[in-house]
Image (cartoon, rainbow, N blue to C red):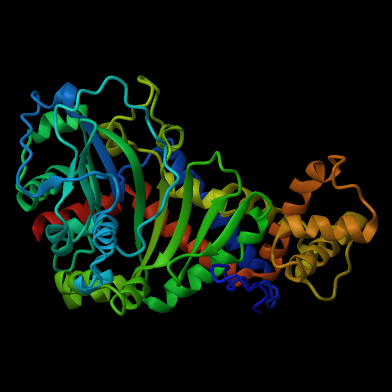
Length: 474
């Protein structure tokens, strides 16, 4: 049912009631959630693996540390009046200034889907311009995968890279503490500049981090099913978040508040590649790099990302203490053991504790599962009727709780400004959870499969040891 007309609005919400589940199904789902919660508790909710990143924007103060890290600029960083602009934008501006329409601007080289973040600007105080403002040469930029920009501005060396720089045959490419040195060595060779990597890592800061977790599914069909199931939860948080299409084949959750410095995303890596190779030359080179094996892996991969682009959010989500204003240490980001993707899913409404609570409610009121039984209490009757009624209103109001509030206010004469709705909002959300638990059992099952796969990656010691053994062998 397509109700929204905005190009970036998702039409994947599916609130149509399914066949109600058997009581045994609900009990199994609740038991599964209890097991997941217990497993995470054993590790005190700290992940046993290292976080991976699909994008890092990192920096170091060359005026302060340039000599200490033995920095040498190299020939592939060229003078620029606007070095922080992505190279393709600088190139476009230069063509427009020259009015050289015959140069043939190559739009294919743009780094596809590069996020435009409203990132913080840290004021430069007392910089000496010891190093000239410069950025990566456009002709070099065109040829290299995984570089958004590398530039020096006001004595700050800024490196903005994506996981594609680490792509290889059968490897999609992500950055972590395990390969950050290899990543920077590769960058130095490509750009013909140099610095002491160990000392750089000790003093570097981080502006942007896209925490990423690749979930390997059975096939592309399972990826699609999980994404659809995730979208069923979006109306629950629609009063404070906007759910939009992401890369044409996924979901993005963004807070309505401008103060928030993070967004969540889930999408099919295979679909991303399939769509982008039709538009971008770099994507073709990417598929050539990962090869047939990589494309097969991509089709089975559900990519989950938390894009963090403000320092307060980096500190909060990665549990990094504030030691210096305007500075988040890169190594603290890379070493974080926070289950960031699970935090992101909670923001999307996918909450293990809440699902367990409401599935348990249905188990305790098991007459819902017997067509021959009648409701035994007035409360049971009220709860299920309210859930069904609210779900219907959600569908009629484009799956947005804010519009549901307005609808109820106008229809029944409530003053939306008297604070009453804020007091009952948790009750309304509980009703939507109950609707999902009772009327969308397949969505709940798919979400539990997702949670189980994430918990395996984050907390399953035996599985991670086995993976390490396989990697060491290969």
